[in-house]
Image (cartoon, rainbow, N blue to C red; front, top):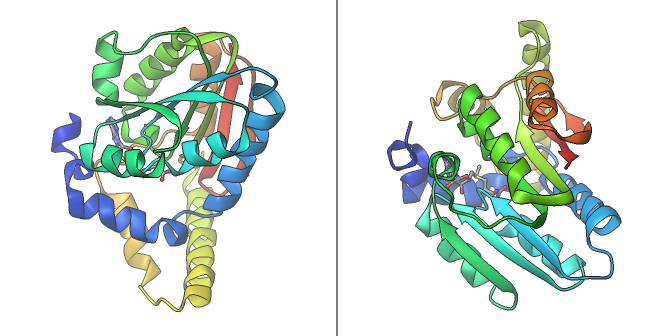
Length: 237
Ligand SMILES: C[S@@+](CC[C@H](N)C(=O)[O-])C[C@H]1O[C@@H](n2cnc3c(N)ncnc32)[C@H](O)[C@@H]1O
């Protein structure tokens, strides 16, 4: 499905996500802080860093990294102009370039320079089919400088239905607890149902995606964090 036919091209849909992300996304802040720790430990040492974020949304993750690291330049890619406008407002103080482009176009065309020290993405690549994910991981590999890292926060599908059902239960528990602290009371079943029924969501198993990273040539591949369907995984060129 091309980006302009997806729900993310709808401004109300993307605004609802931004409003509720802290509820919908299990441990969102913790996952960002783990990627920040990764960035500080492996990437942002004593020289300027070239950072690329794919599916940046409103730029929250890049903002956390740029605040934390040595001087860095960042390129943010998203299919939604509305999201990129919000990211631009958030990142005004930094050296940042915005690329309005779908992942499908990124795969087909040469839209980005090479030489990135780190490529990050958060909850965006699961919108691609299995073949497209594999093609994008290959593209990311070629976009990285030697020694550069790819770190991806994303949802995955469990290896069996019984494990998937348990993951949905712990996701519901997390959302109920989060809503209680924020004084919100939306039926969490609707959120799960929407996640499951939206054709934009095409999660693959973690195992399958680790295999794709191996095939692309990545090393030091691992799952760096996991809570039910929410994972952080990646590797080094
Ligand atoms: C769930 S939001 C995540 C936003 C942000 N990374 C975050 O964690 O808050 C998914 C983002 O991916 C973008 N996106 C979804 N499918 C895409 C595609 N095929 N090409 C480019 N961007 C896409 C959407 O516009 C949206 O900004």
